Image 1 (spheres, rainbow, N blue to C red):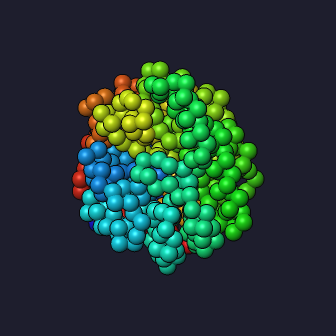
Image 2 (image 1 turned 120 degrees about the horizontal axis):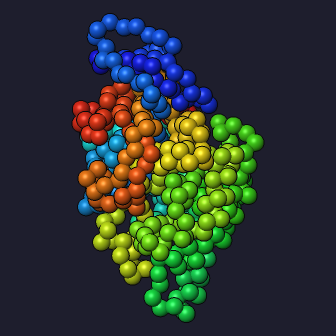
Image 3 (image 1 turned 90 degrees about the horizontal axis):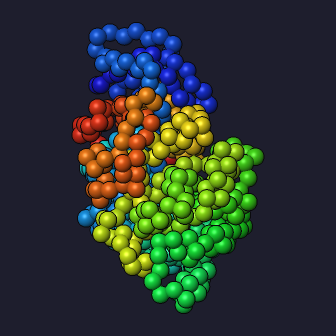
Length: 446
């Protein structure tokens, strides 16, 4: 049994920062105290001047496994994740084949059990005609993170526009329903209107085609349906100021029936960046104008937006080239999400405590993940040690994504990840992956 003692480290947890010792025994946090002494069987880690965060839980990633492993896999992307302090992830169903049955879903779990260095869970996918299979998840609600519905088209062609299917699932599902909300009719109208006057579309046309009205109308439709049936609804990657009027901030996340997520790329990039980065930052929903970014930050800080995630969606650079219609949508982000938020802490936008809340605590509360997301005695030892005084530049040599590129190429973050621990095992330190441990399947306290 491995045993570790973090000495004199600043713990960022549950709204405060305090310097103390943390004792890890096996896969759990055994003790947290101002001063802990142990025998020589423990490995001591000097935390002086460094910060300890609960492991980041990313509720939306696309690790492309199975069927698209030429650009990513659970093996490669889980390693990129822990290098960025992400100790648990929830993967989406738009793989090949789409994860539309329990048999296919279980195959993904089996792959993860053999190859993932981080903890994992997978969403059951919805199509226009698999509602009976989807509702079987009610019997497995402690083992599956949720149901994913594409209420707008994106990579994988899993658009669900059958009203009867939506009604059936919203009315009978006992699991959290996560939605991609963009109105397909509005998107098609915008595309046809723009394409009629402009034959060769550009990256900057993307937010015109997938505009705020497309996002708002679809999010409104999902919320109305959830309110009708008191469904547990989680809307992914909110990207517009207009959608924010749909969410309140008056109750704790554990009491909310409708929650919302914002992704790091919508908090960082704006439509001004298409000029330099082009299709590298093409994604669905689209990155939009600067006023949307400002509104998203405000809503995140006042708790209308509950969670920070990545929607990590890697493609080869060759798949991100013109023409517009063929340039794939999605960005590789999971290795740099925590570092990006630490950059925004450095420039005074967000506190360290708020980062821990939005990237760990709130995700655990939203999905009711058992014994994770906090630094607490008895909880799993999913921990991230951060050095705020050691800047890190993104280079070709330290990118771990299989696709081999990042929209942050050559950007210097003001901090670095010193160590990442998953279930009491150090899996990343000294800028190296330690392949000594596979992650565990997340369990849900429902």
